[in-house]
Amino acid sequence: MALFKLAMAAATGYAIYEVAKAGRRKNAESKPAAFAHGEATEGFAPVRNAGPDAMASDVRKWNKVDEAVDESFPASDPPASNRFT
Image (cartoon, rainbow, N blue to C red; front, side, top):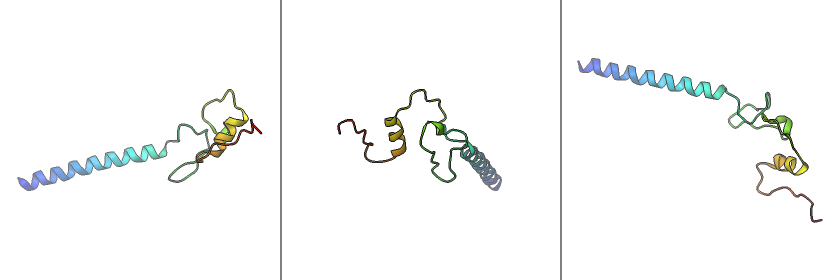
């Protein structure tokens, strides 16, 4: 009887493992929410090109500062806007 309980516990654990593995595979195949179609790069951390054309959402107003911020991400310093020079 103990052997049967051990086999049932092992089978249940294996079934849970397979369900979790299938869920991870499904999540890995989905595209990132902020990327336009075809903009995600392959690999561990996908990267998109800069600019409004690479974004999934429709950007109505896009100026030079917005574009400079998008191009500099992820940088430690914000881009210069040349307002005071």
